[in-house]
Image (cartoon, rainbow, N blue to C red; front, top):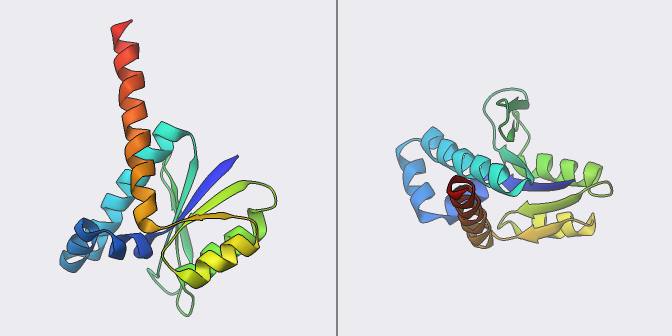
Length: 143
């Protein structure tokens, strides 16, 4: 099974359009990123996990039916720690790619055998998967 683990805030702050949404309301940027990552998962078949910094006292997890898995760090914990723990636990069993611009997080992920992609490097992946899905739908409708 292939997984993409996304450091949500790293991507939000690296993409100008998401950073702009974030300055208005954090939830707007998060929702837009989750929407794009859900579309990627649907188009690619790669399971996506998004990790965001805190939404309360305790760490929490949310998964919409058919949606991506989302983790929020708890008080006194960072999203980086959750990403690193997931990679440490599952990289030996699955092909994992971590999307982040955090260099320490990248080094930790690779030390456990995961691949890394920068926030900017993630963009073409999402665009390509979206284009592939559009082409498949077009072929399907033409039949």
